[in-house]
Image (cartoon, rainbow, N blue to C red; front, side, top):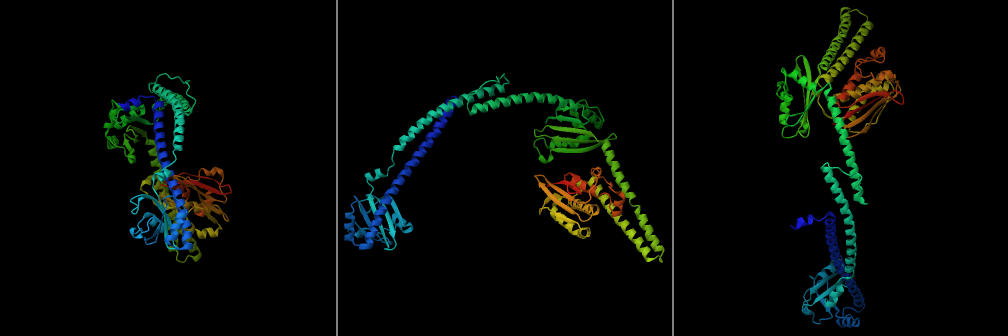
Length: 589
């Protein structure tokens, strides 16, 4: 009931009470701390005074020796009321006490705190300890050890009422603290009242916004920080209101766009109820189904879409991040459809259906073209066989002619081997990239090995390689394809860039997802009209020169496909210093 009554208070008063309670708690802690600190300070002052007396007494002992009579006279001459002086050996034996002539009454003092501290730290004191020799009276003891004389001088004063008053902290600052607290309380009250008014007006604004009630956008708030924040909130609300209206318009545009889209699209709730379905989705679903669907929800009963239904069932109660998307291809009625289901965080989902019959046909023709090219390229085998057959059938052929035929056969066989290898690699990248293994690859190490392999070719053409790659440039990819990228770029530069040039290899940037590479040479370069076609298969800038140098025309096509396999992009441009530069990215993971 009490808590409920407090909550019914205005916010300003609740805030004021909270601040005052915290301030009182802080002030109390501060006063207690200061009181204890002052008490310790005054104790230290008393200890210093007694230590000064101990030093003076030590000077006397040094000059006159340890004589009970002379010590009593010295203590009596230096009048300090109720002063008690004791001399103790390091072993704890009392050898003098000005208040007790019979030293046999004293026990061993080695265990006394002030004595132990004096032996360890050179000096020490103890407060309010009962004295066995003075009827249990409490004393303030201060002791110092003088190793030259092997003596501990301890002075003490009774812990009487006067001394206790001396040790107490001065209470003047308590009144000062109380006065400051009162002033601050008045200030806090004024501040919290203004703050409370701002919060009250802001709460009224929020309640109206929640009920969609009319809001006075020109209302003013108190001139303070919270009032300024409230004004900003009103402006944000105005912008959101306008944005909501704009989104409604854009939503209508989006719906109109989806209805005329070339992609069949259906959006459903987690209960598989229709949210938005365009006409093309319905048409494609009817083609796949073999029957006319009376409602869109019947799409989940189509046998060809059973994988989609199983995917939704697996994710009905929990969201699997690694399984938020499912795609499949369906061949039906001489058409091929790409169906994809995307699951959203609220378990609603989207199904898209695309007619990819034409794309698949193009891919088929492309594969067939590649196969035909590979088949046609085998015809040089007949030429090789012809040269060899001529040599075998003419044992008396001149050695020079025979050597020429063999060299031609070897050159053709090498070119054919390289060509078939490149075509095979491109076919694998086109048809089965998922079958290519991925593993951690050190790009820097791959490049270093390539440079070692082509060292002789580089020396022959006087080509200097500037390798700026950092060590251990790791990514997860296919080692063979990474090798192909840099090997083909290197071979391309050696073959076509010219002599007495430089090759610069650099990784000029790295972010969370990609490495950014530059592979440049300072050679002859190519004309700009060729730059966009360098990555086409069998495209040659200078066909005669390329064939003469033995190129297959597929090297840069392999480079591009290998880069795409690693999630990157590549383009060619003229290098500022002359020559050609390839800029490409490779995905780190």
